Length: 255
Image 1 (cartoon, rainbow, N blue to C red):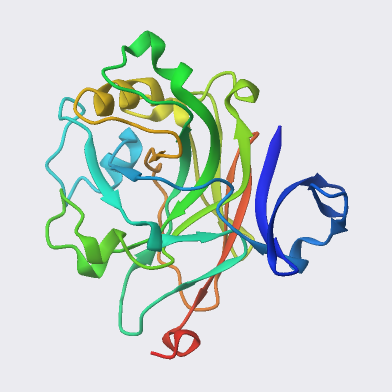
Image 2: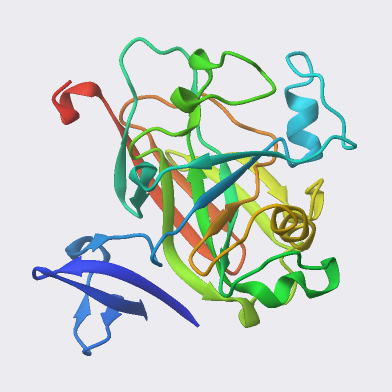
């Protein structure tokens, strides 16, 4: 089942896909543009992965010293970084290279502590799409992203739909692609992850407790390109949905 969370008429509603847009839990049918899309689940800790696709590591090989034998590159993001489908993300004036990252987002459904690989997917509630923006100008170390690069207000786009885990038989067999202004710029498959969803849950739960609502952002394939003010970016994952977002300038945020 696919479902979303939206704001409409001064309240937050559960919503479901409909041929005319979406249908609220109370039966009302609305257009996609009639609502404010929220994260499709109550977000807990955001755990993000960098360099988790072999082709993306190759893409950045001139700047990186990293191999598939290294431990996963993991960092934490705050809830203020999250924005929903059809939302706006600020592109600061003066930066040269800001790019999208289409990622499979894994939502934890029950407490996971010291979970074994073969049991890991039992702790997944479902999946959604993430567009995790980065500003490469601000990198201080090509191997370890810093806060200004990845923990930006409104820079982590989630949605539009939450898809139950039972409806995604194999999270390692999903096609991903990104379009900028209707032109496909990135394509890949979750089969190319260095660390699978199950392996990430095993690894993370070996030293921290994962709780319901925590979300793991699993990295992006190669094909990231610079995006500019006014660009409309769509990230699509097979069977999960298409997440749309618009880049805006400082003036929109009164900067």
